Amino acid sequence: MPTEASAFDPSPYSFSRATLKAAVFLSQRFFLCPRVSQRGPGDILLPKGTRGHTSPEGDAYYIPGLPKGTPELLLSAYYLCTHNPFSPYMSQIARLILIPLAIGMLPLFTNAQDATLKTLRTETERSIKKEPDTSKKAWRRGGVYGINVSQGSLSNWAAGGDDFSLSVNSLLSLYAFYKKDKHSWDNTFDFNIGYVNTTSLGGRKNDDRFDFLSKYGQALNPKLNLTVLANLRSQLFKGYTYPNNVKTFSSAFMAPGYLLTSLGLDFKPKKNLSIFISPVTARWVIVRDTALANKGLYGVTPGKKSNLEFGAFATVNYMKEINKHVTYKSRLDLFSNYRHNPKNIDIFMSNILNAKLGKVLSVSWSLDFIYDDDVRLFGKNQRSAALQVKSLVGLGFLVRF
Image (cartoon, rainbow, N blue to C red; front, side):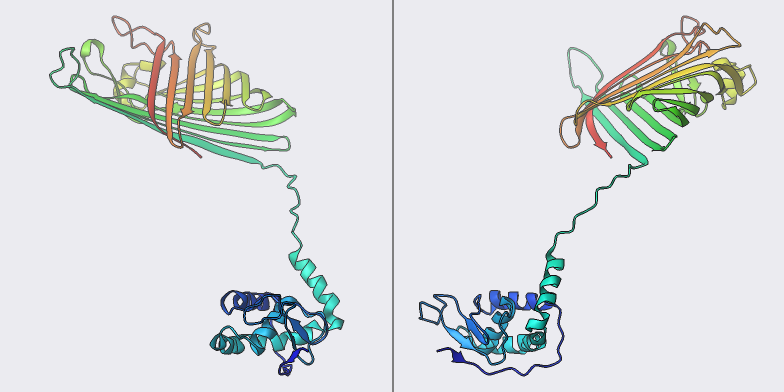
């Protein structure tokens, strides 16, 4: 026969199912309350082998007024509050906590409300299916930052060399691409800076360039855009050449600086390849430094600080993520001045190859070519144009974002 326990008087307590579930979970874990079940109205059936109960079939406790179909969580609460042979003082503590919960929840578990509770439980426990996002992001942004450092020192080295050398090179490359409907807007920014110091030569920079390129296009077809382009390219710090080991001031911020605007067609056969061609281009060559402007360097009239050129322009931009560790970025600019020696085409080409060796460790190689017929700082008399080549290889840190 079931053991009869004291009946509870229902009271107007109201608790959420989540609150009751949490309370009974704590009781089962910390108050040694077993998981229980129910055979019929008013009884609580303990599992076989419950500590403190020897009946192999389990013991039953009867609580008057307990409806059939009472959930297991609430059955555990009733059992814990009426009879707990394992830890009496825990039972007293549990009474203070769980009796109000059990009494308050009793009216909710009548047969009339059973369907509502099942529906509520189904709605609560049902996994929420996220609707697929069919909209494409209009913006794509990202970039890389890298820094390479090398240092060497010699002491009593018979093979010769500088007693001390230090080289630091850093690059920052950013991009922001926008595309929505027929409109596209591509923006890139590159900044390179390098410094080298040796015992024999002292300190000098070996790299200094910033370049901002912006293109806005309206699609004529999926691969061809009518595009307006703007480009600004210069350096930040003073630069020097060293003919015959003589330090000679040759450049500075916006001396020279190149500002270019162009209207043309932008062909994008692939997502990572862009070919822009324009027969209508204006390019300003700017020399802000008075000393350099007075020499008439970089194609400006002596004494003037800028020169406006009209011509044809083409640029090819290619960006490739070869794999998750290796990326390659290349750009080629070609400009022909209609007014002055149009056959002498100005060339600017940059290449950057980055290979990550770990989370931040990387190897990088940059290779740049520049030919400008108006830059005549080379040759025996420093009055000739020449192909400028810069190659830098380094091991350092690289972060993508």
